[in-house]
Amino acid sequence: MKAHFHKIPVNNQSSFSIRHDRKPNFGTIWHYHPELELHYVIKGEGVRLVGDNISNFSAGEIILLGANLPHTWRCNEEYFQCNPELEVEAVVIQFLPECLGRYLLGLPEAYLIPKLFEKAKSGLILSGEAKARLAPLMLAAVHATDLDRIIIFLSILKILSETTEIETIASEHHAFKQSNESDVQRINKVCNYTLSNYKKEITLEEIASISNLSVTSFCRYFKLITKKTYYDFLIEIRISQSCRLLIEDKLPTEVICFECGFNNVSNFYRHFKKITKMTPLEYKKKYLHSYKELAAA
Image (cartoon, rainbow, N blue to C red; front, side, top):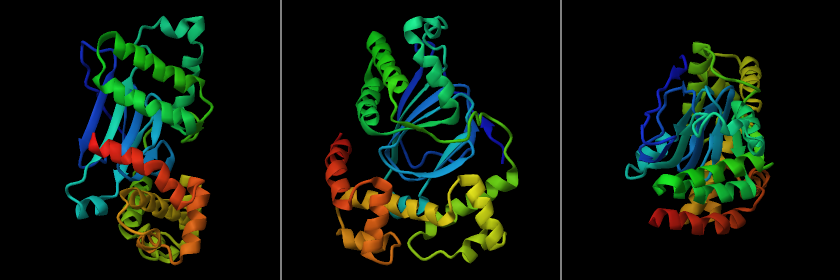
């Protein structure tokens, strides 16, 4: 499967694109475009592919994608099929590097912005205070007009260019190149099978057969592509699902543990703390209130 060029719709009255998406999924087309993209997931979960990286995503994630960096988000279709009234939701800002004028990037006061755009070629994921400051600005940008829109956008660029709370996603400068079709199809099969079956035990023999590889070849292949073992990936998927269920606040934590594929509570707590840096109770207290506010908006 080739990465497809995507033409971003251009409004002649705007310097850059801002939209607030609410729809059944984020689409499945592996694509790229010359615009940088700032993507804030408000609702949704699944797997994202950015350049040569494959990782799970969940609500609250903010990432910056550089120009011509191939990407796609694959939602957990099983969850949305069981809950047809649900939608994914995101705020997306797309802009060309010179959208505010080519001279801005050459100003001595703006020297950090070109450096940001260069780092974004590998994709950047935000965390900590930077993410907490960006989320409300992105929501405000959706409805802003005229100079207010520009001021908010510059504030966003300021936070992005000055923060150290970022991590790269893909290999360095993994801008558009033709992907090996068999590799992409194989990864798609692994992602889809994992998202549909994470609640049960998945053996390496089982997932390797899905990929038409031996266990040894599959383990080597998956580690090469994703920079992590398959079991690490599976645990991340399970923790992502548990985070959603904790925020929904409909089931006890012990029930969520088994609902998400863990075979004992202590194992669940250990993996949850390792990945989120919080206990399930701490996570629930931190995100439940803000989630309910978003849902009511």
